Length: 304
Image 1 (tube, helix red, strand yellow):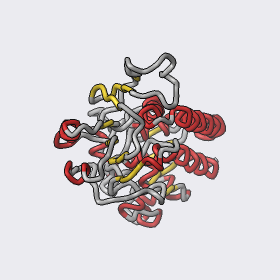
Image 2 (cartoon, helix red, strand yellow; image 1 turned 30 degrees about the vertical axis):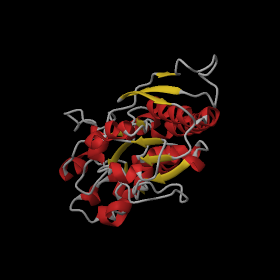
Image 3 (spheres, helix red, strand yellow; image 1 turned 120 degrees about the vertical axis):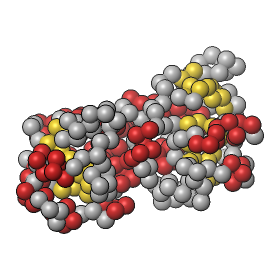
Image 4 (spheres, helix red, strand yellow; image 1 turned 60 degrees about the vertical axis):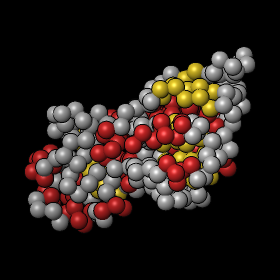
């Protein structure tokens, strides 16, 4: 699970994608056109041939790789990747990577969410291409990352299908839910010490799309996207909906929230409008983004 300080520090993936000069005409959309060169926030990455031994050190990328049909090419994932259940989970870490341990799997492509300790440079010296996909800040950025994974694994059409499906489902949910959200406010809890996510964050874009007023926005004076709120502030804002993204990691429930001093005065607590979201769904920007929208739409339906 990606913790919010790292998410806040990560940068979104650049949108430009180019196909290598050695590729034949029409390779931009050809599903098996190699070599392929993409441009990420870390610079250009060239994949010479269709990879057969992929390592994912990013839980979001892991979900996307399996969704686009590249699962059979994945030989190892990091210790935070837990979806789908069939992933080849290992003790590899995306936060404190061990180059020797990674190289031991003989990968021909590594996908990561970060580039700590010069991971990319070290693996490139071994002839292993690395695609670094930082936290997306927009839906467009999230879709672009899936598109790039399709390019570098030879699943272009599959990636396009996944993206189209996500857009269609999310647009349908938004159209049905926005009228129900008029004037309603939301508090998204990342941790029990009241870190939240404003509209400047990817998570905040979800609430914005649904037409909810995010109480963290006024408190995000530094513009980080992840302000820490005070209990007094949350109580004074009295949000209509509380979303707990710290239920799995930290055991937060409607009961623990209601037991906090003064929180019994909050509208969401009084009405029982407290939603527990699987931390992994709320902190990733891959195909299960649709699940996040569905959970929120269901909560809005009950509120209305």
